[in-house]
Image 1 (spheres, chains in turn blue, purple):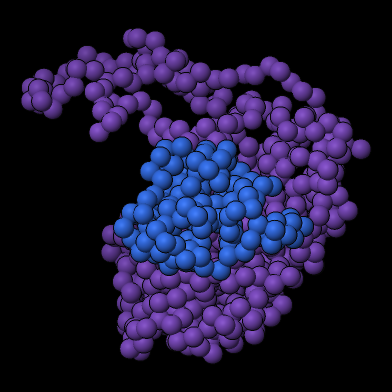
Image 2 (cartoon, rainbow over the protein chains, first blue to last red):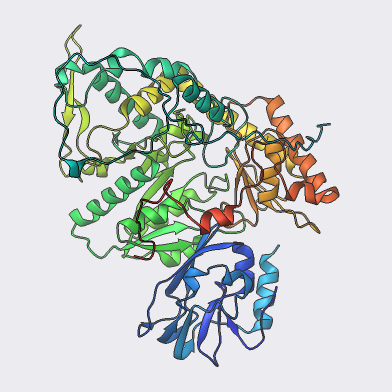
Length: 125
Length: 503
């Protein structure tokens, strides 16, 4: 499992990059879901969203899951390429598979990478 | 000890019916016409050709017989698909539902001409009330999820009738069937997920925190999808009722309770039955289901219309006159007619009549015994995350320390041992879930053979992981590419000519 140190993480397995304002789902989440086959982003550029509110819905061969915003703020951009290539969430969850980008986003209830890694390790058993 | 199936390389694949087609072959040859010819419809209504396969009758029959021999069914083998209650369906149900008196009737016939049908429906309503402890039952809903939707409509109508308009939330445990949040979502309700505690029960603290005057109610499956009876069920219901909410029971797992516990007595306000699970109506492949709904006394007036009632009481040797009645504050019709009559209601009626009260109790007891026997045999090989005495099913983890074999691989490998795989990856709160429901209809030999196969597969996962990860090997088709199937959906056989993909 991979959790880059510069990102913040939620208990529901989203990541947030305070520097760029981008958000997506973590490597742990994609691993649990396995092959992602569908993604729908539920917000649009210009929307104002609150941390904890749904921003996307993803489906894998095993399950479907809601993705909640890790931060509050104004949506500057959404990743329009992602719905056509949902497999990017498996191959590059922290890079090309970003879902939304916030302008001046304020993180909600998030933790740092070390705490998140510990949280994931606890759940594996 | 069970022998591991050998790999077979030969695959017999049946061509499609289109590939079998040969121009000019027909199933039926018409005699020369002995009536005058009439003009064809206008040209714009005609098409130059219709690409239908051309085959003789015998070729069509053989094609579909070959395909049907690829099937796996309850009638061919053990089918421990958790949550689906794939019990054996007694063949007498097939006889009764084909009785001409039932078969050749129409829902628009005058009631005087279908008294037998109505008497059966009335009696089934009465039996379902007695079995569940509810005051009223509708037989209309076409399936379990349709029953849920009906139940949630009734709950909403109840609150509205009291002028209580602020209730917008439905509480649903994280172990719930996905249909529960879907049914609530269809009503425009907000779904609030309630976590499970370490014993697999509803987390009471979280529930208490969620209970307020905006709660429509709670949808709870008991026993839940872990196969566990909620140890605090009375407290759960007290909390929901305490905030003015109603308690909805998902009756999917009623098989475990027949003749022992009545949901109505526990305090549930509404519940749907899955006749196709609990009362032995064949199902799978999407239907047909049957999802009657039972309600407590304070909700009887809201039932869908019509329900079957007695219009005129009988006298001495005269039976009563059955007909349709409209509940006072009905939510309206949920289906054009009266439910899945022949397919669902007659079969379920037969099943209940054949078993009687003691037989129904036996069903629940054997279902629970079988599940516990399997759980006990597998406990040392597969991790059981919520390890308690289970009800009619249990959930094991399909993974092993130091092995990358997963639940999906184990499920596929079971097919090589000629067993239908259990439900996997559900419920979501268990990693690599294998949800096993043997049902009461299986004998000890079958349960032992299944347990032996699972134990053998666990050994293979350590010694020959590649064999398990590439399973199945003995089936007509090998491992399907589920990812490709989901990502590249093709929902029709061919694209119409000139179809613009980009449009």
